[in-house]
Length: 147
Image 1 (cartoon, rainbow, N blue to C red):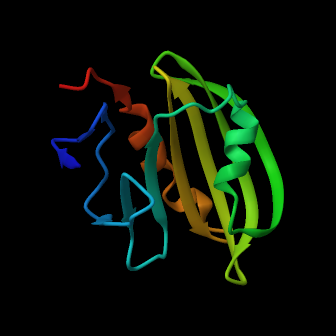
Image 2 (cartoon, rainbow, N blue to C red):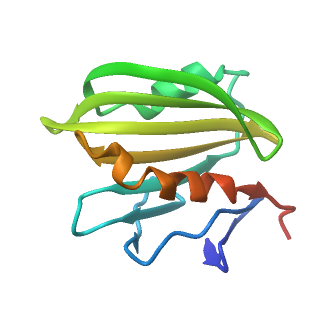
């Protein structure tokens, strides 16, 4: 897997994401294509692509899969939006991760037999602090032809 000039490439998949400001440090997490965190504030962002059969699962079902590991989940908002010319589902939750209260923004879409998901985790009450960074990451998203 390679990530150069905002483009992630791995076997069968190639996509571009928007740039993040320098406050974000990229980290490697085995379960994600891309992940970043802010050391000073405890915010985290991740992006993942899964290209296999999903039995045509709905965006709602795919979103629920992203919530595994979080407890005391409270849905606050869900709305459809367009990402890279496809319908996406944006969801806002309050939950706990290892007993710590957090807020989540999740964006899920399907395109070209793949599911793409974006996860933004913020300390409770601090979602708005860096939500524009998630929006920049998602706003620059575009699936490219794998080479």
